[in-house]
Amino acid sequence: MIESQLDNPKTTPPTMSVDTPEVTSTVAPDAAALSAVGVSQSALPRHIAIIMDGNGRWAQQQGKPRLFGHQNGALAVRAVVTECAKLGLDALTLYSFSVDNWKRPAEEIECLMALYVEYLQAERDTMMENNVRFVQVGRREGLPDAVLEQLDITTQMTARNTGLTLALAINYGSRTEITDAVRTLATKAAAGEIDPAQITEQMVSNNLYTAGLPDPDLLIRTAGEMRLSNYLLWQISYAEIYVADVCWPSFTVDCLRDAIREYARRHRKFGAIPSDECPEQSD
Image 1 (cartoon, rainbow, N blue to C red):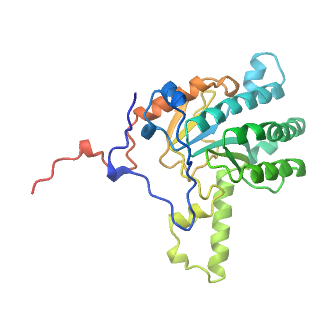
Image 2 (cartoon, one colour; image 1 turned 120 degrees about the vertical axis):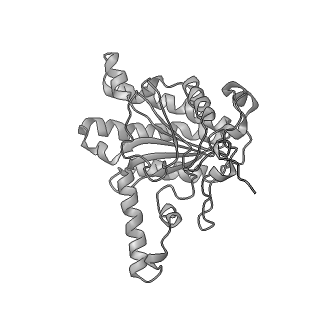
Image 3 (spheres, helix red, strand yellow; image 1 turned 180 degrees about the vertical axis):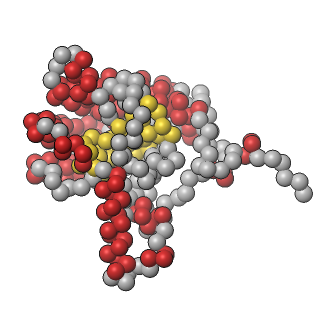
């Protein structure tokens, strides 16, 4: 059993402001799931963010159209969400469709939007069974009405669930998110509601799409790529990064457990010097 590495009180991340209550799962980990991953509860990441890369590549490797990869990628989502819910994590954020993905062929975009509708309809029962609360992060403008309708139905249906928060990043871009937050704060400053000199990092966080979610502890990217791709750039400032060589449709629960084990082995410093490396202080 791997124990927690977060043993230095000087290197814990900052807490959320009381202005934005932080989402916290009230569900204890499933004993079997915790045993299978092989780490202590205190060593688990609270929030995992994933860049689900390689759907199209995976399909092409098998001589199939890109949509086939996206369809199988949705199956991987179900397995990972269910496992994170069993582990009692606070949040899981999945990068599903970026603001830059609108540059893709119109046919692929249409298929992806139809897949979101199908996924949300099909997975609501699974979310309810696993006490998962669903939210969308990203701009709503530009998304088809059918997608918005299913996003809203799923959000409302799961709003009272108290376990894992599943945040689906659709029509998301981190620079867009930060720009929107700055515009909101600038509008408030122009109206005299806030003093620009008093704007804090926490105020910026409170105006991001992810307000209320803890910052990710672990960022996973699949398909062996080493890019952040405009994803949660503010929020992942101190996240541990794990790159999996497999494409997303091949990312299994075992792959997730490997990433969590690697996370648990790392000593997070948050910019400080670990207590076991500090020189002894003389009186």
